[in-house]
Length: 216
Ligand code: FPP
Image 1 (cartoon, rainbow, N blue to C red):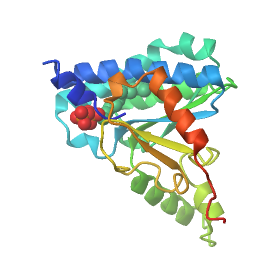
Image 2 (cartoon, rainbow, N blue to C red):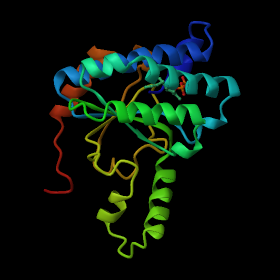
Image 3 (tube, protein in one colour):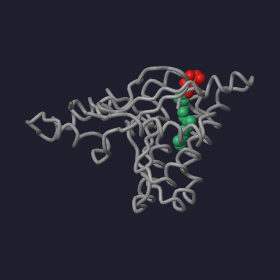
Image 4 (cartoon, rainbow, N blue to C red):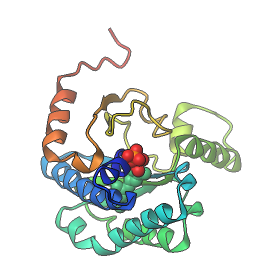
């Protein structure tokens, strides 16, 4: 969800206003995904590298996640959305971690779209923690299946479509293992302006791609 800061700066607003608007865009896209029957959406809300930002911006983002999860249970219930989390939950402020745990528990029974929030997430960090868990569990076969089984959300399927907005063309430590065969779409649109229409066009572009997974 890249481009929130620039969206705000172009309007002479603080960067945090861009994140607030970015959350609205996320809600729109999630709603549309639920309506059309997408099974899983993962949102990169805060990376393990985002702690480098100012105390104000980090605090704002943590609070945005917290208040959103506290206030949106009705939205999730109405749309049958199940919340999951990936990332290092132990490194989050205790109140944010508790709210994530509560939201995942409260929505666990919903059977529509799964929305996974990547908060304090970095793919290298997830893999390093997965390997540590394997050592602790005494796993001796370092197979792809056992690595998968030790990821933060082992049941999440591989990524089909990875969308990055804001004009940057890189993965920035996002789902490196899970996106091995993802179709990548890079959009110049700043995330707060990325709405249901562009999401629909992106899905059409994805549908037109030929996916061979290494086959002929
Ligand atoms: C990247 O844009 C965006 C972020 C680091 C934060 C995204 C988080 C949200 C939209 C809130 C999501 C919360 C929930 C609960 C889904 P940037 O700030 O790097 O933008 P820039 O490249 O223009 O500076």
